[in-house]
Image (cartoon, rainbow, N blue to C red; front, side, top):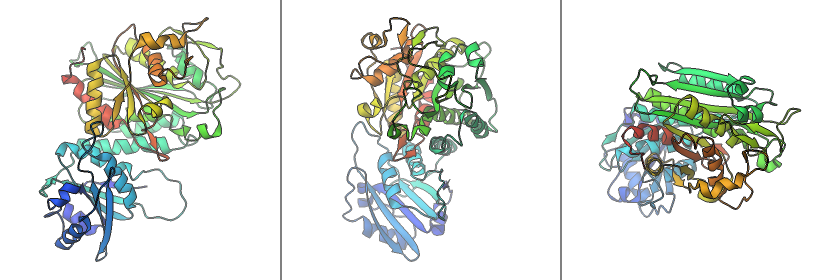
Length: 491
């Protein structure tokens, strides 16, 4: 367990720390940073350490001891490419991990702009995950974080930034928790604890056989044979449409497969390990909901977490079965390991038809093909609106939760799901034909007749890196939702 703090007195926090980590661009050190930030002996040692330190693509480290303190200097790249975040959050994350912080630690960051504070703080928190079941004795890391500009003037982390950091760490912890400790009901219990004290929040569950009564045949089929029942968790906040003045009804939808065996299309051992993290989308939308409500979001807001274990049992859904989703579409199953889209299909349809969503953002660890398309650091996005796509890219760069667009072309991809006996199949015929876009197309097909503003975010790579959950997407979702009020999404 690690602890993050945001002290108001940086000098006092530095004095109390055993390890001090300085993070700034190489140019920042060359200009004299961290002058006026620390005790003179620490500033002098930092000046010596940073000389000749070449940052490379993800930063470089040098360290020394100053009295009883360990001083680590991290030189960050001066420039980043256009598809990277100007916050340099990935370099901050890499350097912080390599610094191997222990005990009482203090990180001081030189920010090019105050707006970079959130992404940097999340990166620092991401480097110190909460979950651990290691038995060896080790001191918990207590990291105090402070920031200043290139002239040494303090830059405060406001309450919203601190909320994003803690919510992201919560989401990462859920991804790291094994399913024996975090099943569908436990996820709901932890959600209640996370949202405790927030005013105006309502929580509803549709559980087990009741899913069929509400038309959610996909969630029910995937999870019906597990010991713990599948469910659709519905969080809401804000005025009702009839009596309120909500600018838009925004619905965040998350895939919450708490464990994915692959079902009867059983995964091999190597593919099944880490599938405790297949609920990263659900964790992200719940955490983002917390940030938005705590920050005073004015619109009508929902978060839907479609929760199930894709287990095997006597009543498992099978290849060749035909199920009916909330949209009314009949689906011939041809791959029980393409289960996430069945959950999302039900949930986005519920959002569009039942909740009358204006904007739907679904988030899921959906396809291994996402990693092939956009890698470990960029989530893949698909949208039916150019304005929403552009907004997501912009928010990704500002929050550090990077995204990159994939094609939205239903006329090219819908044929992949053709079935002779049902409206469509759940998995593609040609796995070489833009798999991630096709998976998104399956979800879109459940709401295309409603035509809401829709954004799909595939976080298969970014949600779980180096064997750890990251909490990816919390800052991105909160930022996109907050920017929707002033965004032109008509195109």
